[in-house]
Length: 174
Image 1 (tube, rainbow, N blue to C red):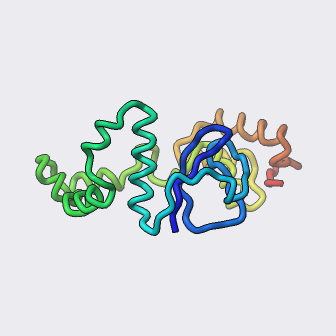
Image 2: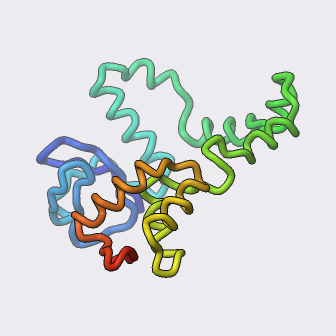
């Protein structure tokens, strides 16, 4: 069973599937017993429940007439399923070389082996290298396109925050 329910605190409308003792508004977080929630419609059809909610939202915004001219969710969904072309056909129709686009997508402009943010690379160096020194971390990050200056600042900041420790020139994650 599906129900379109409303929140008495913030007037948010949403769909519930099934039935539980309490419900929580996804917008404001107010919790109420299911029985105390205002139910605008209860139906076995999810598409019908979606249509009712969408209609109510459109009416709130003064767009009820425009919404009435639209097809139902079920009709729109079948149109989408049948009207989608794959990316290869789209690229070819646009006059692009599909193989060149695929090759470009495989290249990372930040460098061949960098994954994640600069900070992620520095913390990964601490995890992957065994008892790394500052110079080893700088080299690891440098191979991934990160400046030595950034690495030194990041290590200093991570040390001050208590995320890493440095002892006798060697770093480790805490």
